[in-house]
Length: 276
Picture 1 (cartoon, rainbow, N blue to C red):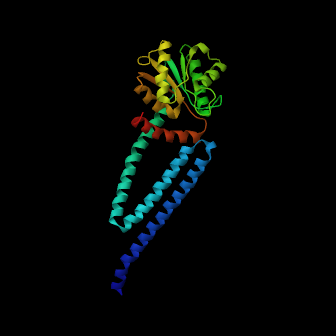
Picture 2 (cartoon, rainbow, N blue to C red):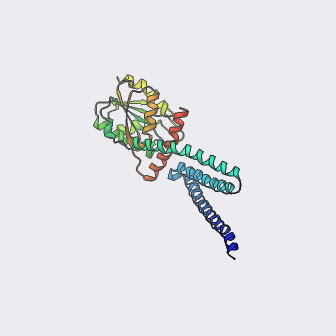
Picture 3 (cartoon, rainbow, N blue to C red):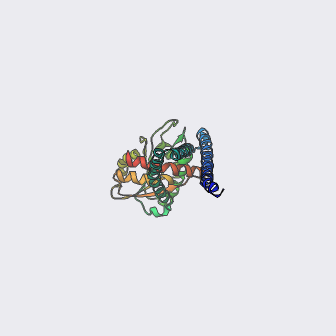
């Protein structure tokens, strides 16, 4: 009897272990299902403005489902174990740099605007226009630009941004209308209405800065944009030959938008490093 029980114990323990692993797999699959449902909802509800978060949740759901598949394969086959190891190693190689990059983006975006100090000129980067009215993102930039221009009454401002889909006027013209309506002198404002991305914003703003008597390679240029966009803007400006760029961050009013755009910006930084 004792020998029979001794033989059965390892099998019983293995069964318990296997049952625990199976339950863990189901918990992971349940989490994947929740992520997938939430992600699909955010993607479909365009009005929330957080579609990137939806796609990110769908990606997390796919990663969790693949992890369960590989874990089950690894328990049956040595090749599965090697594939699971390679998958986890690759995932770590992607996630660790992204997390570090995200920390940098957040740190730059949270830097107080007061640290921008005294600038010789300011560039206001464009964002979406709804017909002729500034979008939420653009309005926050304009309010921050208005605040900065009032605090620095002697410096010129370049308003940069072309005309995109659904926009009846250029982003530069929309910014000009908004700022002059709020008391900024028109002679301080220089319009650049052709740029279609951040790199063009800085490249096309250079001639206007020279026209205003500012050398972007030697003088200090303040850049007003949303807080999540500060780090990438400074990187692109440096690549365009700007010497001293001081970010003036404009936060979005709602937390879910801030989270969405900060998450997206880490991936945008990767794109800028590799392609821009």
